[in-house]
Amino acid sequence: MSNLKSVFKNRKAFIPFVVADDPDFDTTVANVVALANNGADIVEIGIPFSDPVADGPVIQAADLRAFENDVTPTKIFAMVAEIRKQTAIPIVFLTYLNIVFKYGYDAFCQKCQALQIDGLVIPDMPYESRTDLAPFADKYNIDLIPLITPTSGHRIEKIAQAATGFIYVVSSLGITGQRDSFDEKLTDLVTEINKYTTIPTAIGFGIHTPEQAQHMATIADGAIIGSAIVDIVAQYKQDAPTHLAAYAQTMRQALDNATEKV
Ligand SMILES: O=P(O)(O)OC[C@@H](O)[C@@H](O)c1c[nH]c2ccccc12
Image (cartoon, rainbow, N blue to C red; front, side, top):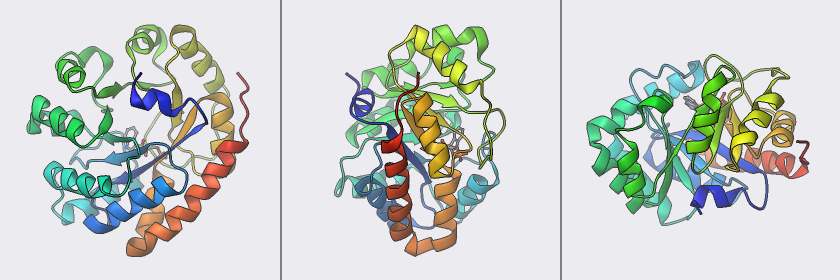
């Protein structure tokens, strides 16, 4: 079984997202370790890209800070190597296809495997375009985590059936960032996905409070939290790890309180 899929067996998954090299190399390492030690089940590490079409202002600003530090995939692989000295937590990269293409599909996936990166989330790679990268992901046992959105419609069946690891359910249309309310139809979307697959689902986009996380975990198998985490990093900079630890514990508790509704 995919390492990622097995994460969801025992509890609702808490999946925080950080931007690599924001505010710096060492703090990124410390942030991931703090999240891992305080209730995260998978950490999503963002590899900044110059044209992040799906990202809202909070994550775009973090990308810019990382670019000021001359972030590159090579530097991020070195960060993960440091992280791996301290935690075995499952990690997925979130990035855009051009980053992987430029590094080389084979070399990138090989490097991921060497660092125990379990999956890739690539928001600008539609399901239909995954065929170039998929053979390399398969070769090195990397899950390509698909995104399903409220407008995926008739494509849901084939996306769900081909999925490995978990499915990233995008809560609402638009860009990343905090939201105050969510469409009631989200439950129907997850129910529809579950008709076609037993792969776990995690909901992301807009979740920032423990109450929202708990609600999402009654609908799906986990919650992905990005901008709220990146905001804490922006605010506390080198002191972020202790603040992230406290936030992670709150989210962990909220997810543990969730009971399955569907
Ligand atoms: O920031 P939010 O609203 O909590 O959403 C998660 C998100 O940040 C993370 O998964 C993500 C960062 N960049 C993305 C681009 C596309 C899809 C998802 C993402």
